[in-house]
Length: 220
Image (cartoon, rainbow, N blue to C red):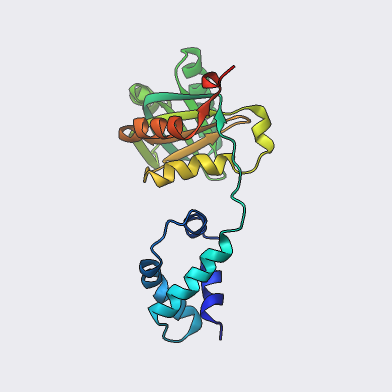
């Protein structure tokens, strides 16, 4: 049978939200104890008093405090927005791959936005929502998922950040803390694109702009 402290350690470790909250001292420990009590009792197989759990949480917070916070890059090269997009996901097949490759080439020839992601069993294409009718003619098969109210926020960061742990986590964390649903993610060497509901695109852009510095805004 494990102790309360051991049960808490098992619950907290590996949980990014709890670890983040302890590191930044964001929790009301009494309310957190009340929330975690059922989980702790399930692990310890005994009744746990909230006061004892609160004390254990306090010790855990003090133990976590000396740990150095992960240093994440604060400089971004650019933040761009693309609105009015649609996401379509299909079951993957050789015939579909050929059709979507043609769609991708034709859309880019028109200098329109197009993003193609290939999974093991599914394929997702993201393009201007105005092209949905044309896409349906080019790909005459049922889709698994469709959302025609999507926008993209693309962040570009300096090349030397690729070897620094935490840059992608820091960006995703900011979006998550705003309670914004990330519909899709696409990334390359120094870019990551978040596809979010159209209604939230300004919030995501303003969040990134407020939390990170842009290269062009730095003093010479």
